[in-house]
Image (cartoon, rainbow, N blue to C red):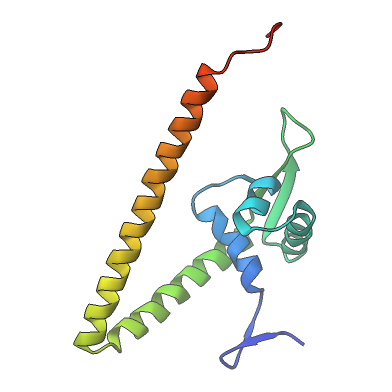
Length: 146
């Protein structure tokens, strides 16, 4: 039995689509990055990639410098699936936005603005935290022989 959402059969799972979406920003992704981005174990990420390979959406190859690292790329079929998904997302968002009354639009706009500010604050704090860690690391004495 296939997956069904709003009466339509889905060709892949939401998790599989999230994995494909990682290729919006990069052409090559390794399995460790996929694992971290999706919050899953390396074994689960490997199984996910294997299923997407079997569906013809991804291909895997070994890194030329480090044969232990698998590099994952979208295939032509994967690019089409991702593009189709993105168009569907935009269409759904447009339908939802056009259905809002002015008050709902204002509330949504305020919520998105606040969320954006929270993300911006988190990014700034994360950068400050990293800078602090880097500074402490530079100040720590190095063990002899290094």
